[in-house]
Length: 346
Image 1: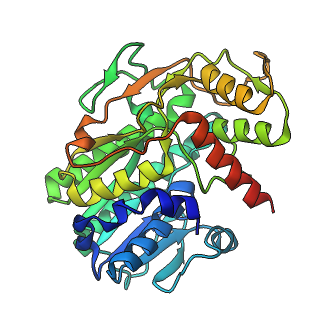
Image 2: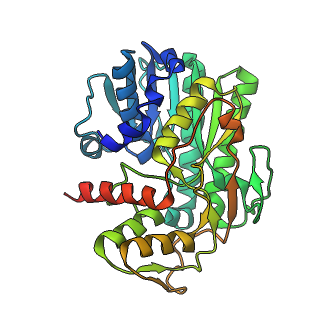
């Protein structure tokens, strides 16, 4: 279990509202991903700290990966279930009181190279999880969405949950945000039509303790460059500006939404002070670790990078539920990822 993650959520783990999970079963899809695995590890700790007896069902695709990810975690109350979101068929005897639906394809290259798979994985998996939730009468359900559903609000705009946009369906790369938008609407419809307690968490790119060496996203690339002492090579001008989310903030935000959020409501989750451009993040990491930043604007073709975006998330709605962000800088967030990747390489 990541010591840093537990350190970060230690105070949160004592919150009284978490006792709603006492004796309950929480099902987490995408449980070997960074967010899913961090939720499982955090719930194990929360259960121990408050003696809640929480049981967990972790939906995974690879048991060997799960064994590696959860090495050192007390799994006495965790059961693993191998499943594929594209063809999900849960056993009839499975029951859960709460569901956190994390499973999704998040690799940028896949948005361009396998867009149909991206869409069908999102839609089929989410539809089946909602049907399961309806059939079993869950007490709470959180769907993990993305800030990309906001499109490109532009510089200087603080984006609240009621911001609406237009995303071009003729652009193949939009397979990701458009499928997420459809799943969000499906969640809202299940809440409306069937009074299902479904909430949506819109996260920005999340990292920190638990990042693995196989992670191909930009923050992991920066971390690997720092480890290797090699130059950071950007395939765009790095003009995109966005917030980021520290993994502890993702965990505490999701659990807050699960237990305190309004049915059918949407909530942004991001870390305070994390808004910056890609070039700025690269520059900060380079300065901290004594490496350089170079540009190769021809090398980014077919990598699935989004066009230049400006998305500054407003988290006031989540804060109204009592949530607080960690006090951590972008460089410190990268530092924790570096430590995690080094451990994973051993």
